[in-house]
Image (cartoon, rainbow, N blue to C red; front, side):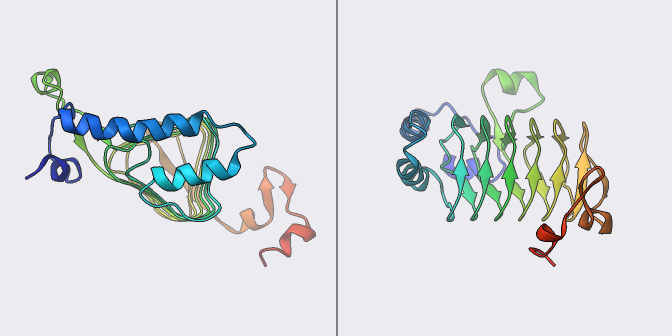
Length: 207
């Protein structure tokens, strides 16, 4: 099995391979260029993201600075995705994010792990597990998603949560480790925040 195959199969591999590091450095050059863009350079940012990512749909916006191990090379974005400041994607293998998902500031989505056995860690070995985030999710500020996790559609992950296991669709989940708090329900059709009611003008947009 080749090194690239091991990277994307969950097998242990050595990430310090000279050829792999050379390839990675090229992707990081594009990432550096993206992070040096001015706020007025929207078209340049979009062009760079299309070069950087494995896939990226229309109307996606990432607020610099953006951090990624492979510069986004293994990231698959749908359309209409928004990510706030300091998104970190440890994209040593594939990360999938569905349409209309919103990502708060200081979120980390990681695919890389390291063996518990100290002697293997000392040799620098690691493994990668893909992460999948569904359609129309909202990850609050400071959320961490660890390797191998799948998050369903329409999920809200509360700020500061550490997502260590799969989360089903249509729920609010919070905590460390992140657990389902409740399902999205009829009350959410009435109130958008605590006792703040959705007004008729906005209600017409979705009913």
